[in-house]
Amino acid sequence: MSRPVLQYRISARYGATEVLHEVAAALAPAQIVSLVGLSGSGKSTLALALLRLLRYRGGQVTGSIRLEGRELTTLAESEMRAIRGHRIGYVPQSPGLSLNPRLRVQTLLHETWRAHAAGPANHQALLESVQLPADAVFLRKRADELSTGQGQRLLIALALMHSPALLIADEPTSALDAITQASILDLFAKINRERGTAILFISHDLLSVAGISHRVDILHEGHLVESGPPVAVFRTPQHPFTRRLVAAMPRLVLPD
Image (cartoon, one colour):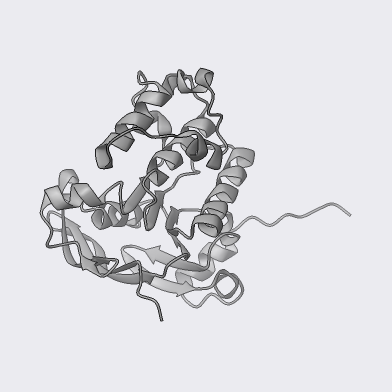
């Protein structure tokens, strides 16, 4: 059996308030695991904890985080900087908040490449892989000239640049319209299928992640309350919170 790409068991707190309680899970190579929970359940806290960034938000993490067999909690910050963006790619929620609006696409690509590599780079294939144009006109566009969908695809491209083993996507479709959301979900499935990248997909929307996930983990009030294949979670939810979540999902009713 292959070694997990990611394996963790952590708790997290802000001051005296504990927000994650011994949350434990693992991701296998080429696996998509969706972490689903309501706002305030601890999803983004978990993402920041796995990236060793929670302390910059005033949080504290205890426990173990292993990436490709390597314990991350004992690494110096300089060692973690070499891992973030290289072995772990991160796709945040909003391109409007995450991309410097005055920088051009070519500058964002160049700076991300330079963070972990040297020498010239050809970003044409990378942009095309996330269904963005690679022509000079697009490369000269500033980040604030991109549509929300283009901005989100660019964030994904930046996260994939160094072929990470793990991609953490924190609510990457929440700011998108339904059609663009569907295309971004298809893109994540394509990345997983063609690159074999393990993906932790964090969302509040159980329905949107069902089609791309190999496993769904349900987070409720800082506890991992249920975990299983999407079909099992949808059809036979075990935890009372999961049953309420599934019952609240919209169902399409057509007129006779």
